[in-house]
Structures are given as C-alpha cells and as structure tokens.
Length: 530
Image (cartoon, rainbow, N blue to C red; front, side, top):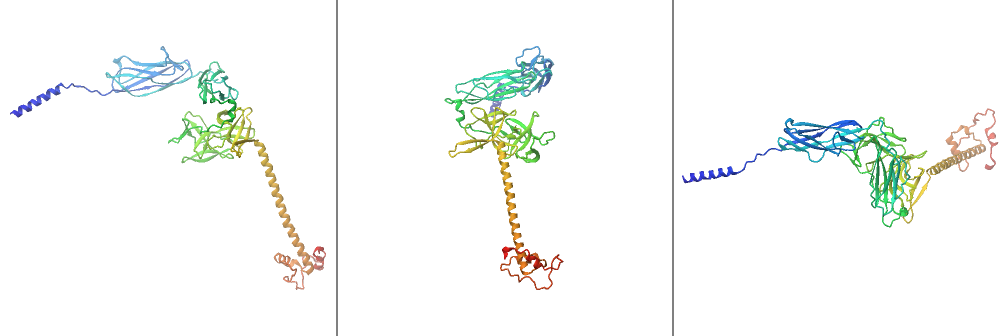
C-alpha cells in the first residue's frame, strides 16, 4: 500500500511540473516572391510598370522599393529620386497573388533596369514574409526619329601634355606623356552636337600607365567613347629620354576561356563561333575551308599567302567580325588590317615570345579605325607593329603616323647584344628579288646551252672520224648498224678487221652512178687526219 501511495504522489508532482511549462504555438515561415514587368516607349510617352507579389497565403500589406535610372524615366506625379515604393494598404481586398502598377514618363533615350532595392516588407497572414526570389524588369526608351545621332567631339585637349596624334573627330584613341609630379589630367572636351552629353572618367594620374575615357551620348542615346592612354613618368625620368628606356613587358591582350557550350569568352564577353558563312563577305586573299575546331567540323577561312586561320565570332548582341585563330595557343585576336596601294598588312598580337627592339614603349594605337597594340618611339612619329603582309612576309613593320606609310622592319642583334634596327623599303626588297630571279634563269639557260654545244661537238667529231677512216679503208657504212659503227669509231689502233669488207658486192646507198663510194669519201678526207 505504501508503494502505491508513493507512485501516485510521484505522478501528481510530474503532472504539476508539466502544467507549469509554458506552451508556444510554432508557425511556419511565410514565403513571398516578387517579379517586375518590362516596358518600352519613345521619349515623351508614358509607360506602365507592374510589380507582382505571389505569397504562400493571404497578403495583408506590402511595400516594395524599386530602383531605376532617373535620367531615362521618372514616375508620373511623384518625386524622381531613383527609387519608388510599390505599396498595398487595403488589407481587406488582398489574396495570395497581387499586382501593383505605376506609370512612368520616358524622358531620355536609353535602357534602364528596374529591380528590388533594399528591404521589401510583405505581411502574409499576420506574419512578416521572407522574400524567396525576385526578378528585375527592363525599360527600353527609344528616341524619336527627329533626334540627332551625332555622338562625336568637335574638340579635345588635355593639360598638361599633348595628344598624339593630333585630335580628329573620327579618331577615338590617343597617347600622352606627363611628368612625374602630375597627379590629375585636366580634360577639355566639346561635343559636336549641343544636345549630346559628355562624361569623363579616369582623370587621376598614377605612376605608369593610365586610361582616361570620354563618353559622348547622342540625343538618340547612341554612345561613342574617346580614350587617352597617358604615361606618367617616374621620379627623375625625363620625357625626352623615354626612347632610351627598355621596352616594357608585353602580355597577352585578352584573357580568354572556352566554355562547355562551345562559346568563347574574350575579356569577359561571350562569343559564339559562326559555322555557316552564307551572307558573310570573306576578306580578299582568303578562301573558305573545312576546319576541325575543338573536335567539331566548322567553316573557317585561310589566307592563301598569309596562312592565317580566320573564324567569324558573333557576340550575344548580334554583332560579329573575323578573328585570327592561333592554332598553337588556341586563342583569338581581332582581325585588323592596314593597307598601302599595293599591299595589305594584318596586324597580329604582340606577345612575350617576340624579339623586340629597344627604345620603344608598348602602347595602343588606332589604325584603320581599330585599336591595336604597337611599339611607339619617344617622338611618337613612328610605331612598330607585328604582322604579316599579303605577300606572305611576316615580321615587324614600321608605320609612319603622319601619312600612314609602311615599311618592312628588321631587328638585328649586334656583337654587344644591343638591338640594332634597320628599316628596308618593301618595294625595293621585292625588286631585288625579281632581278636575282632573272639572273638565275639566264644563268641556267646559258649552262644548258653550253652542255648541248659540248654534246653536239662530240657527236660531230665522232662522225668526222668515222667518215675519214672509212674512206681510207673502203668501207661502206650503210651496210652496218649504228652499234657496229660506234665500235668502229672507238677502235683505238685504227684497225677495222671487225667489219666484214670481203664481199664483192658493195652497197652504194642511194648513189646509182656506179662510182666507188671510197673514191667519193676520199674527197672529204681532212688534212688533220693524214
């Protein structure tokens, strides 16, 4: 009985302890997702952007901040700070899927992305919901046909320093050098069209190479960039001695990667390799070939004399062009050419493996409207580029900045291991090879003529000897074969017993006069053989 009482007492105490434990009702976290619509319109028109909220239960209220480019669109009837709130306030009318719309006015041409900015507050079934996903929208603002597309500069100056080459509205890249004490580059730029806008970045000058970009946006939204590559000298270094310094190290121009889907990424931009060249103009001097690229059979073009392999790459925005494919490094480089009246040159990348002359600095330069790597001299009157000509000559070429003339350039090592540079005119070199070929052909003709003359003289001497000796011995040569006559001619002791002359009947050939052939042959006997 005592044991039963103790057991009941224990159960009672345990029940009291359980009753004192507070009870919490756990609720599952509420979820919500946000999507923003896209729209397009012309400048001056109004567009509607919609934010849609999808929740796991009934939506009580919502406030979603959305960011946008306030230079392209602005909310109708609200402030234009660059962020606007899409809100739901009337809790009695909402379900689990709700949309909120807002009007914007298009104020300039261009493209802007609308995305959730900051913390979106959404209440679902009395609880704060977690935003599990959100998608952005895009507004494309088009310019009216009357808007100008002029995005060029009419003037560009820097201080201190001087642009090289001189400014031209169509030239987009320049070079400059400033002293070691210059920390900021002053840029003065004026647009050709007053409706265009100009922005400048990269004015700060650090020791070494610097890049300043002048962006011109036309009234219709089209953009053009002018770039200045400025070298800030080191302390104690003078601009006039730049040519005496060593050529700076050269690295590959672009970082590249081949993707699993067959595309190639160059400098962060993805390109696809075009396999069908229908409608694509193949450069002069190249022919279409079948090529094995990464295990796939594709179309490519190959230079008849240059030997270069070109492939057509197309970016995601639909723009494309030919690129040079390096079969050894398996990399691409832009197909850039410069031309003279008779010869075209393909500009190739400058790599570390190339032997380069001293006194030149690596920089970028615009040739034929395209930016390429070159070695520039201190006076910036000439630059060297590595390439291959349409004649198949590969190596360094010198480009004169003032008139665009091009000469072949050779790098020759001296005994002191210093690079000595010599320039040769390509046309003169071609003429020398032409005349050398003419001399070789004439020499070959003369040699063949001498050999033929010697053979004929030998034959004539043998015939002369045969007839002279046959005339002495009364032998009619018409009765014997050429082989026997040759043996007869080569008999050293002039004995002709091998020939059968015992026959009473001697053939006189075509002579029907009855005269002895021996008598006639004696008439042609030569005094030297007597």
